[in-house]
Length: 257
Ligand code: 13P
Image (tube, rainbow, N blue to C red; front, side, top):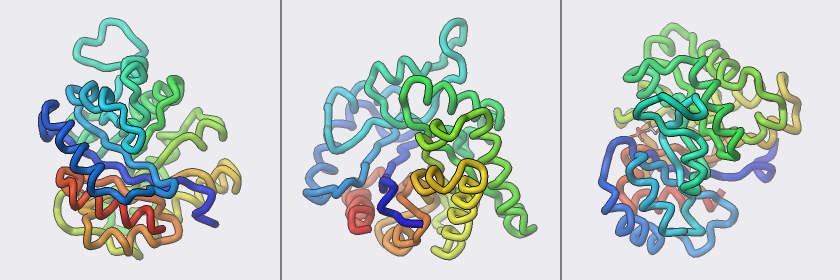
């Protein structure tokens, strides 16, 4: 396997933080702090739906617009929901799907995750599909089994060409927002297993091209070791993406790979 076939993606997940009027200032700071050349590394900011217009109207060529959720339905009587077409109209390029916080708080099922992935691909938006085990599952040595189940469910019904357009983020639930990062070895083991699964189901060509990210307490200090792993192609960053200097440090580590 070779990293040169895949894109490094450093994606910030702002979760439910900041306000739309803070977007411009943050982006200016981030632009100033990022390396002059991104060397093919994609930088994405996944902001709340209310912030998307502010971010996309900046028309930054160096920072792609990302959303945090999408409706699995195309249009119609779904009060409060936002469709993939609406996201595309705002130049959204990436959208997080199946984050563990949504699986928990909003009872998002594997079936809904799969429908959302299809809705996004249909409109040319890259889904960032989140999978991850709980601490209990890890302690019971069910990690790889659980991850395989979640990945298969999220990709069910897709052909190989559609799978190639997906991004998968491994986010162990116990590492999210806890300051307890997976070791580089633990993260690599799971990301490698995901790639192996993609290889057996969709072939070597596809598995070589799908970017697999790690997320869970990634920060400016631990990012280099994680991003240096052969099957980790980037990061999905929560807390540290709210601080422009720290996020830029992670971007720089991604560009160095
Ligand atoms: P933290 O980086 O705050 O642990 O969050 C990770 C995450 O959930 C990104 O989606």
